[in-house]
Image (tube, rainbow, N blue to C red):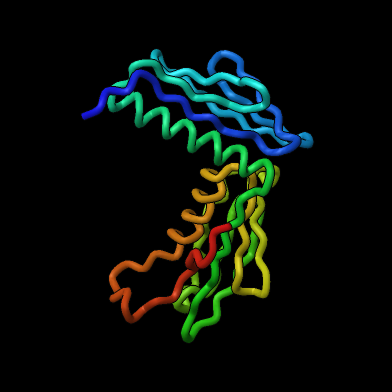
Length: 182
C-alpha cells in the first residue's frame, strides 16, 4: 500500500457563503442563515484560507484518511445547504382507505391509514426555522431545510410512522414513501 505524506481536501465555498472557526466548531453563514458543526480530532485539522475551507492531515493512517474525507463531505453538504437547500418529497400511497395528512405543531398526523381509527403521528423534532414540512395536493409532503441530516431524519420519521407490522408488505403497500431527493 502506498504511504501518503499528507491529505488535503479543499472545499470551495459558494458565492456569499462565509466561514469561521472557533474552538473546533466550523460555522458557515449566508444571508442571515447559519449552520454549525464541531470538527475536533488530534491529527485532522480544519482551516479557512482565501474563502475556501481546507481539511488537512499530515502522515495519515487509514482512519484519519477516512475521517478527513467524511469531514470534507460534511462541509460540502453544509455549503450546498446554504446555497441551494435540501428538499425531500414524499408521497402518500393508499389503495382503499384514503388517508389524510395534517401538520399540527411539531407532529405530522396521519389519519385513516388502513382504516385505523387511531391516527398515527410522526414527530417533527426541529423548529420550522430549521426544517419546514408542508402538505401539498393532499398526498404529497415536502420537507425542506438547510441541514441535510435534519431534513433526512424528518423524512425518515414520517416514513417510519407508517410502518406496517404483521402483514405482508408486498400486498399491503399503503404508507408514505420518499420519492425524490433534491
